[in-house]
Amino acid sequence: MPLSETRPSPAGEPAGRLRPRWDPRRQACIPALTTAGNSTPVTLVQALRQADDLLGISGTTAGETVALLEYLLAICYASGTCPATVNDWRDQVHDNRPLTDAADWLDSRPDEHWDLFHPAEPLGQNALLAPYLDEHGTGPAQLVIEHAGDYNQFFDHHHLEHPAPLPADVAFRAMLTQHAYGPGGRARISGKETLGPTLTNLATGRLGARIRVVALGQTLGDTLRLNLMPSDKAPGRFNRTWTVAPQSRRGFLSKPSGRRVDGPADLHTVLGRSILMRPAVTEDGQLAVDRVLVAAGELLEPLPTYHMQDAVYENTANGAAKPLRPSASRAMWREAHALYAAVADRDHGPDLYDRLAKLSGRRLNLWTVGLIAKQTTVVTWVSDTFPFVPGRERDLRYAAERGSLIAEYVASCLSRAAYVAWTVTYPNPKPADKSSQIARFDAGPEHWAHTAEPFHVLLDETTVAQDEVRVDEALVEYAAVLAKAARRFLRNRLDSLPANSRGYQAQAQAIRRLESDLTGTKAPDELKGDRK
Image (cartoon, rainbow, N blue to C red; front, side, top):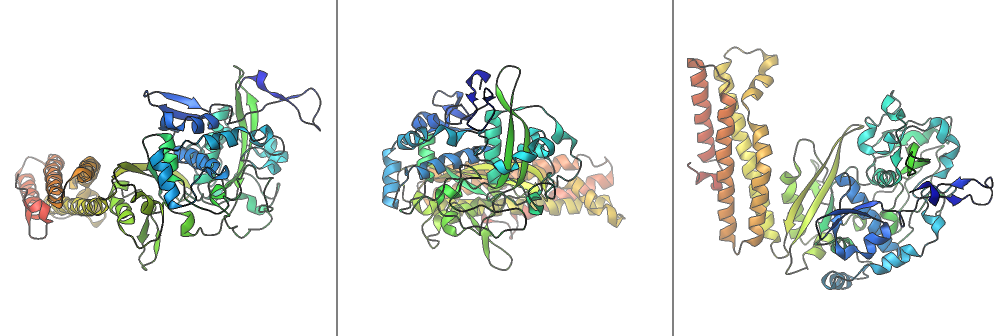
């Protein structure tokens, strides 16, 4: 935003001072994909008004994209642009009902309510931190989840002091992502010197510990309508800023109990962090952020299933069900059977999947997103997309379950073949070297990296299969692809063996063991037909 667009200071501030102002309703802040295949930044109002002319939105990361979608959904709820019943939801989806009412509502809100840098009510932020921003704040890198590093921030993090300004639109998107996904840890700010000792306790964001599933439509408008939850109840508060709320927000002198979410607008705008950003103007006259404070935010009561309608559940060791979490060791596609089980089962009550199953005659995609963190350090974002066609739920579940089982079995075959090669190659190994020596011959990593594409092909073929016979044929083809690749991966691993009798013996026995396991009595039926 050019400096010339700043606004006069409000009453109570020194006269003549220009105050920077940035409004996401008027300033382009959402990277959108047009039907022409281009990417263009749009404002919040434009995103809603032109939602059916845009293919979708695309943030810097998958988590940022989800956070933007959550914010647009919250605006739809707050404006009353949401279905009251499941039948109303289905009509809105089938009729491509425009979201212009949400755009009009947003456009008509008071300007001071949507100012990212308002002195008393900054959008999405906590103005109570203002007296401490200059002394205790850091560079804007702390605002971006992927740039902050270890969230135990009492350690010496020199990189957080870097003063390079962050453009206002980037800062706005990073703030929304922090509210939704912020990892747990300790904030850099000193609670004793500021608002209280619990200010430093960073709780994990409401989406930070589970997989979020979004139903993707053909356009942004279609996607928003698909994911709007029907409700005839009040939407609840829209958390515009920390200092304005129906009830007082938590303090920081002691740990508070979690508060109850009072509606979907509240849910999608929970202020999971106390954040305050200091505006700056770059050399080219653009508005940016050069200093931020990030500290503890709101705490919520455990959410009822009503407010987690996209959640996919898995059973724990004690038999209790909990939302599926992203895993650093298991790719998302290996849990696809759980996703399809959520759609195929009809004993969990009305939720997103129950509604999607009613949309006969169309195909859509289920987009899964998660944030992987090791203790307090962010590792990576993970995401994947899975096809869904109403009426094909059980076939998709069956294909996903069998596909995952076949992949697991092939991985175990490669592990056993590696063990055989190890026993021949290292007749007198040191116990401490065993794991690394076996890993030398285990082609499991190559297998898992390769299998994602054939698995998705299997799912795509299942969506168009006309009967169960074709699904079974697709599974046999999938198994053949995996078996052929496994043989190649094992041979590549065994190429490092020495060209002597022991090396030849290890190679021959490992290959023989792999062949025996792939076609033996314990192998899945789909693999037994593969003799190539």
